[in-house]
Figure 1 (cartoon, one colour):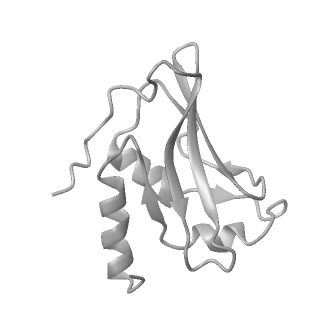
Figure 2 (tube, rainbow, N blue to C red; figure 1 turned 90 degrees about the vertical axis):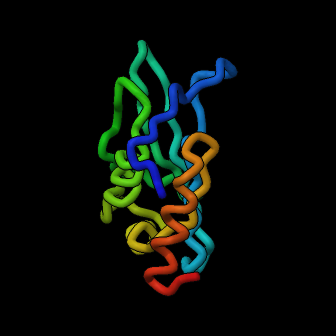
Length: 124
């Protein structure tokens, strides 16, 4: 059973000002696109950003938070991620419309959630 209320105590282990929250791979993409979501901290606020190989700027909801997200909030952020169609490089909009394979060092159940969702859509 997935614990959607799971929240890591922190995103940081003291080794730097930013950390990888999760990596999303889209196997159905022609280019095997990947998007990484990072957290940066400044004055106690976590600023979230998503980056891909092309340098696209993704719109995240939320863009900042004063505490680590719950698993449910992270899933919402991933599933509502958007990109500006006017400036997008590659097929970013089509890519994020897919169901990713997810990996996360901070959210152990994220991978299982998206694996199950991929099965529901017949992708694995």
